[in-house]
Each structure stands twice: as structure tokens, then as C-alpha cells.
Image: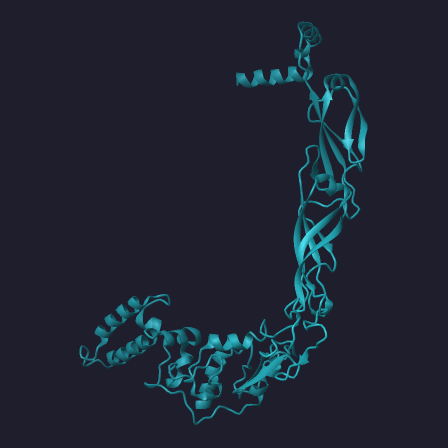
Length: 443
């Protein structure tokens, strides 16, 4: 029936998996519980749809031509969906010449094919019709429907969003006006917001902790009007347009659409004498200073949260301040997680004979005893001498030993050193290396 045809098209507009029941007996009164039942915002919007009568069967989808055969116009013309106007026109001309009735007088199939080609070209050569087919498929032209004439079963929507004055349906406009109400369309009360700023600190301040003064700009409650937006001595009055609700409703066909009140911008109040300090906003931008405590063990990229120092919203609530830290590198220490790494030069005499050296730690200088025979790159680990994180995890101090070869400034020093090192070539490590090198060269 005409009613069932309109329901099929209506389901194309409102996909069955999200809004409407897929039951064949759907009469415009079944709303899918998975979407509407779970959304309090959808219920008032579709309440009129639930209560609406069936589409009038006396009204049909009008067309300037006969019943449309459900075929893909792209396949009929043999072009892709991304084909240009020139490609579509060229394909049409070739097929029109091939199947023209004057050329195929005794071929009935050619006459039907020629009509099919004309129908396909009529859709793809018209931007509006092509867009309708791309969006709704063959259902957009079911039983003679012509998109240029609109949906005659939807006259109640004329003047609303996606339905033009001639009833033509523009789906993207229609849905954008409905669903903006579910997203950012409703006027919400001004909420407090957080602020993030950056601060640079030294390596020492990061591992030991410190205090730092932060300067920044924030939206603060106006002290002149105490955040009311009204001039001192006056009060805001209830908006007569929305009666203080901040919302306005508009009936349009099956739907009742709510939107923020234009008279009061959704606040529900009218300020006749605005505060001169904040221009009636109730808040204003100010320069602020706050001293924060940076805990020991923070690392580069960490953030310190300062409660209630962000942007203020209405009703006195305030967001938070987040200070993102940038930690400078250090000339002495390097950091690996909670571990500290330091390279310590070792005198040659201590490296050979052994002895005690002084090394730096976070607590100050301390002594480290070494045995003789130190090689460059050897490590000594001091447990619990690293960084204490804000989670009370304590790292280690890793000491990398670097023996220092002295410079000989006199001939006497050179002779003495030669006497001391004349048997160096017989050292086991050196002798073993020379033997390996010679063996490799003979291969």
C-alpha cells in the first residue's frame, strides 16, 4: 500500500537498528528501546511521533515520471560512484545511441533498456537526485517518488530544519538540528574548567623537592557583583519568555524541539542593570599568583595538581590548576628512573694500588673505598642513595669509575714511569689479546 511504501522510506531516514522497530507491523508507534528507552533526551523529542497517526494513504510520493524500477543507476551507465559529470554524460550518450528505439525498431528489450538508461541519467545528472540516491538508495525513488518534489507525506515538517518550503527533504540539515540538541545544543550552566601551565625547575629541585611561585591568568568570580552579573544594589529578574527554565520548545509536525531561550541565552534570568566590572558575565579574567609545593622525586613531564585554582564557573565553583614540569639536565648526575648515575675520576695510584675516594650523593660528599686493579667503566652501587619518588620508592646511586692517566711533565717522571711499567706487555690480559690477534691474522 501507499502507507507501507512511505514507512519503508521513513525507515531509510531513521535507520531501523537505531531508532525504529524492525517489525513489519510498525505503524510509527514503536520506538526501539535500545536508543529511546535509554535516553531521557530522546523521549520528549519522539513523544509526538509515538502518538502520531499513520501517514495518510490518500497522499502519495509524487513524481514527474512513471514507476521507478529498482536498479542501480551507476551500474546501468557503467560508471563508478566517483565518476565526474563528464564521465556520466559520456557513458549516457554512448548507451543512448546504442539502445535508441530508432536504431532498434524490432527490439523490445532495447526500448526498455533505453528507458532505463534515461532514468539512470536523470538521477545522476541532477545533483539533488544523485545526492538522495547516494544517501537512501532506491527507496528514495520507490513507486515514483521524486526527490525534487519532496516527501508529500511529511508536510507537517515544512519550515523545519531538513524540510524545505516545498517539502523537499535535506537529511543532513534535519538531523543536524535535531541531534545538536543531544550534544552541545542545550545550554548548560557554566562549569568550572581546569588550567594547565608549564614551569621549569632544576634537576636538584626535582629530586629533592622545592616550592615555586606560579603566575597565570584565570577566570575568577567577579568580586564587585559576587558573581551575579547584576549591578550592586540590583537583582536579576526571571525571564518572561521561558519563565526561568532557560529553554524554549517549538512544535513542528511530529516533533517538539527544545532549544536555549534566545531572550536570556539559556540562563533563565534577565539582567536589566549589568555589573560594569564584569559586563554582566559574573566572571572576569585576572592575573593570579600561587605558591605550590613540588614533591621530591618528580620527573620531566610530571604535573602537580593545585586544587580549586582553575577557572571559576557560576555559583562559585572553581576548577583545578595543573602545573606541568620541565626538568633541566644536570652537569653531575644523570637519572634513570629512581636511580642516579655519576661518573667519578679515580687517580692512577688508587686505581692500581687501591684506596679511598670522595664521591657526591644527594646527601653530600661521602667516602668510597676501592681495591687495587680498577679498570675504566667498573661500577659500584650504593643501595638506597638514589631518588626517593613521591610513592616512597627509593633508588640507588650507580658510581662509574674512570681511572685518570696522568701527564708526565719532566724527563725524570718519564724514566721513573718507564721503569714501573717495563713489564706491562707481560700482563695476562695484554698477552692474551696479542695471542688472539696473531692467531686471527694467520687464518
